[in-house]
Length: 456
Image 1: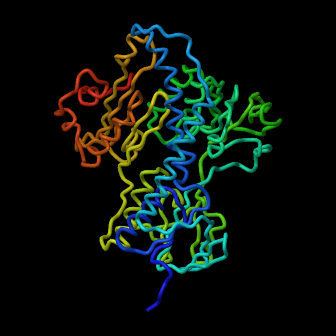
Image 2: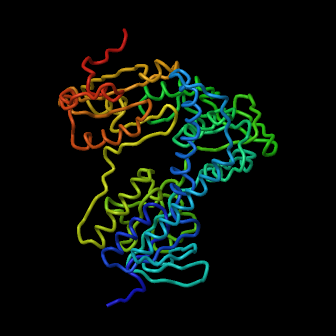
């Protein structure tokens, strides 16, 4: 019988790799995990967590202004970015230690080194040159920011990875890209007093989301003071940080102190040595896997953003857990990518689960739409003009809910709960028969009775 140094070698200490390693160790597997940077990966160190903390910071300005309408006498507020940066760093340090501690308590051996695959059952640690043999190898190296090399001066731009290292805020910034990262950065920075210009190629923000929400969020961002340049792209960047000029393809130019490129992330597979084991990479360097996260090489698996299936932290965690259950727990589990609830932490916030109206009409003959737009109760006294939009996409033949979309305060919290109902196959009748909680914004989800009929 062939003997291996470990049962499982995990490359990558992000959310997916850490979960897989902990669960596998809990099943009695001998696990070694290599991480070349900080434990916790993109989400904890330079993604979801610090982003959400900065989002909260930006929204407090709105809360302070809104309080005046409720009788509060507010002195002119002030904001100190250096305090936020210190507090954020302290929290990230705490979380990194928690990730490391959870692994160590589970019995996982942590190696601080870059690791590369050197065969179907072997991994080499570049820091020491040591080769470790493993019965199973799991790739969980996540994704890295994409920078278009054809753009002259691209080296002058920051990415989301570097943004959270900023010690001070610029007075002005140009953000390129209208996906999750670009939208969230634009909304939080404008509320921290930065002059923000958002440049993107599409007609509205957030391609692939429901069009009504895209239009409404684009309008809300404009009202918040963000300058939006739609259907535009960058030709070149000139100058130096602090005094940059961004030249657009139409001949216009934008002056700013910093540029952030948020045009997506590609699977982090460069130099991993996967070809030595017989794995051919897919589009953008993604690792092709089956429903159990297994590659064409039976001993090698991959989870998370590196597979380019659904680049969301909870998905990576679920895939990592399912992998460990399947390979080491003796019970095959599939991490379903259907009906994934997701939120964009823009301001206003966006939550969605299921099909957009456009997607539904491509696959269903009879689609019925219910939607409402209203001014939230809090805004009636604060005087804020923001509105909440809610939309239900229903199969007119079966009454099954196909999609739910919300733009407004706490939509991320609402969509998590709605994801359960959608996962269970809720119908419009189920929504109609659910008692409303009054007064809330969420009650509108169960009180919409009249289908939307487009004008004309």
